[in-house]
Length: 468
Image (tube, rainbow, N blue to C red; front, side):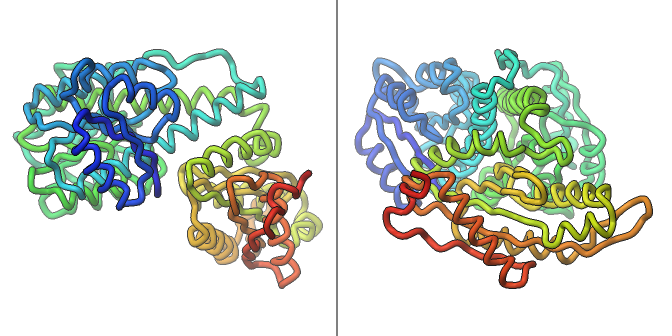
């Protein structure tokens, strides 16, 4: 994935070095040589992540971070403070200013790249929820409930650690801060506890005896009930390579042992507050929009929402230099399902297909029902290869597993045809992209159904004139 990174440092040599390193990893890099310049760029361009030096004249990094986080329009932008300072007090001060991480220089490149990618993914997910909320507001479907200051008090925390000393220190610190803690040394019990309770934070020791801590983190990320729960990893100072792998798997933050009490509380507070902020966005949006912009049968977004949301999302992604794709999916011979098995059975098929679609795509992909037996999957930041792979997987998953019907209980074979289209340029219109995917869908139908077809790129000039 690509991301727009703002590098802020009053030392131009440091700026040029970071710019070269990040550009070599295909990040889009912006630079600022002062705190005031950085704030101006943040307000105008809304970067995906800010790498912020602490020691700067006039306005230090702590103050810049506080101002970014105090502005509701920029508070969601991840900030990583980069400095030569290494005292725990300085790290805690940065975290209390609202920083999402605190990296000491000179640092290892592998940890820097992994952290930037991890926080950029997190911002992409937050951006998607904020954009959906803005779409609902434009359509007049949101209530006037605002997300104000979110409290991190009385968090419910799961600690997975077989080190008795860690358990005792962490339990004491979190309990003194008013949090509720459940502790286990067994990965199997950790998964059971996570099913039973909606935790605000999960803390995992990387070095569990007889079990790979990263595998447990991967399992948390693969399960629907813990997919959005922040994970804080306990590591040792030499665990750089495995830490980078953990960040790629989706852990949110980490603590280096021996654990400092204040840093533990600051990082826990930050992650709990972030989860509650995202939960508030999600709950407010879903509550306000469900009646107006979702399909009552499947619970998916409906055509009205798709048409309002697609253009804004497509424009934002393409202007950021990232790819954009969508799938149009149609159930094969759906009329026969209704004629042979009845309309109630047809409704069951539509609901089950909706469930399979939602659980076969990424968290920030959007699935909508266009009407009848036709569905659309919007895929921001998806290359042609990812688009094609997801479509093939969906097609095979539907065909391979029969659909279970009730009253009377029976199962039937169902297949789908899928048309795929990737945006050809920043100028392509949403209706032109949908039309190309539709044409690919009809080719799949004519070629025998139960298959995927990829739309060809439009001829020069066709993208902007298709709907003129």
